[in-house]
Length: 133
Image (cartoon, rainbow, N blue to C red):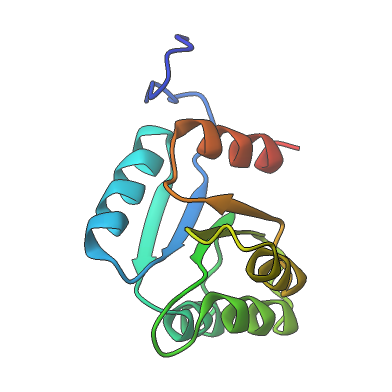
């Protein structure tokens, strides 16, 4: 198997599922494309309330990539609610904010890690390493 960045030959690897929570359609499309190239099956929602609803309906994912600033329900509140519901999957926060205060508040909501946007193959590989443990 090739080790090239972006290699999508994952035929013998487990397919992981990812929920992408972001309200920017361009960002959604880029993140979904990157995740697909790394072998993820993805679902995309536009706000934190939709993410909570998806899990409330009995759906599950291996990992959630959650934007911090979202309409209706932000990523911090959505992460708190998901953890309160007993959601155990990895949740990675995504943000463009470099404010230590913002990032700390997001982490304290129950994240497994926080990623500075944009999402890229290196950051996805880090998430994969966490999933494969």
